[in-house]
Image (cartoon, rainbow, N blue to C red; front, top):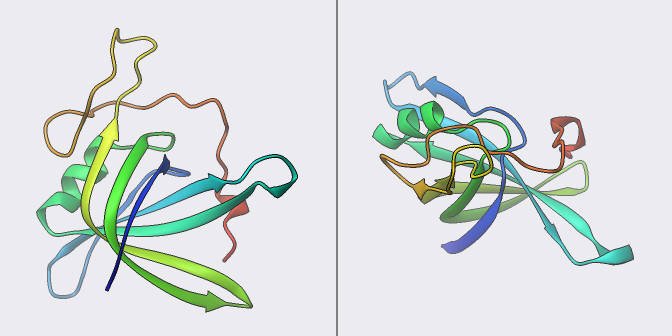
Length: 128
């Protein structure tokens, strides 16, 4: 098992669904930039939160929300490009500070609201 910690801004609203077995799953897309200048690149991570936390995450995060994710990493390949999937073990998110007087984060009761981010993240850039 490979464990990874990533921090980034959600590129779109989370998708909540229920499996045939009745378990809820919340899917998130998180781009993470690395490097700088001409060597800067963006890695895209697809994360899934399962169980009771799936609904909580879906209700309290939106496109642009800053998240920190800890989970199990699985690396695959699709059309010659790496695919990074994370089964989330822990997640924190941050609420916008600009208009509400302070930043908040949390994996349960805090972190509600839409985060503000300078970049307009677009899922059209996702390499799959």
